[in-house]
Length: 344
Length: 121
Image (cartoon, rainbow over all chains, first blue to last red; front, side, top):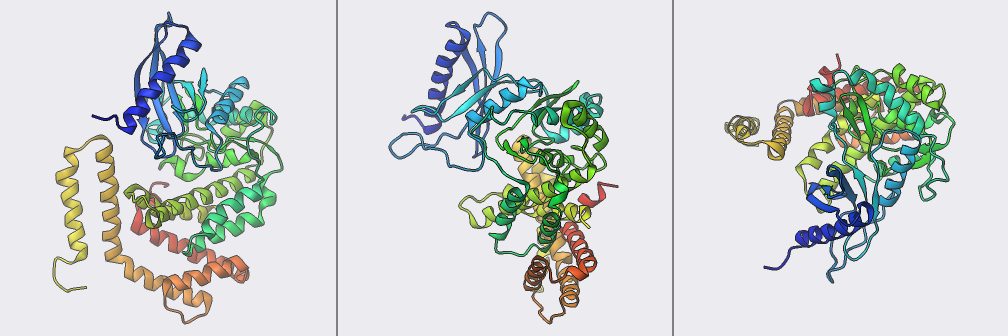
């Protein structure tokens, strides 16, 4: 029987990882247990172990662009978007690590060639990434009270990544960032007066956004961190990294949707704002006016709401029908509710 | 809509109860999660069939007063409201506008996810 695309993709990936690990860990290194983790359309994640290094097997994760084949059997170039490349994402993680942001080690990268898309390899850390479990499971009971401070500290460190360290990343002011999401809303032919109100409120208060330009993680929230029994183990998902207003990150982690029902704990559903801001100050980020966080929390709530609306309409109008996208579309009402509580 | 029973709301309820009681216990992992998404959507449809018409009428009444218009169509009324918020025409009534918008989102959540508002107290 002929090899399917997914069989070919896995076979070629296995070959490449075998070659690369031999270069990095020595000739005896062997790739084992290569398993595809996420079936998401936007990125591929694979888990594997490297044995034969002399020590115990090295647990690793590969994150790469999705492999799709053109008619001639070559790998299609991934679509351009406002995200970083996988190489840049991996480099940002390395830069964060240099400044003591908890991150996985990044032992090597994959360049796009005839057998694979671009990707990077990172250490597979123990711990939990699912927000609801972090907030509910008994084993994280002692970690939870520490997380807001630790996240504040990690944010302050990230925001000190030198801008010249990763020259490829995009630059976006608060105003441009707000306009980007509002343009997405305006492109949809359906009225959303609640979001219109929220947008206008934000636009009139751009002066509350805080005046600072630095590296911004862009997707720093409960759900994109690894938590273990001791607390914050790693900050993940750096692909929205850009140069802009760093307080974007402090508001995003406070967006009520990422509190998973634990509304009274403003930071990620696990902690208080004072703790996060103390961690931010101790990490070298300076004293932050809570009103700046309020602005960016409202901004983040608007942003997630518009993203939900976009997913709903991509189900309605797009080529791929999905129950999950349809259901997320109506979750915009949750963010609209939250946004209208935040504004006045 | 026909007057025959079970009506649409009762039929959707029957489907949801069947899926929840008979199918859900046989599933685990991703399929169980997807079924939960599906039954939550069905619950939204049930609540919409029960309360949606009344909510639309109340929203339209509020909007007609706020916008001072005779337009009846609730989507068109929302278009007008969105346009006037954008242009700043309603700035001198922003308290009333915000109150209307908050009431409307409470209605939306009463259909799509009533627990969302409860969970914060």
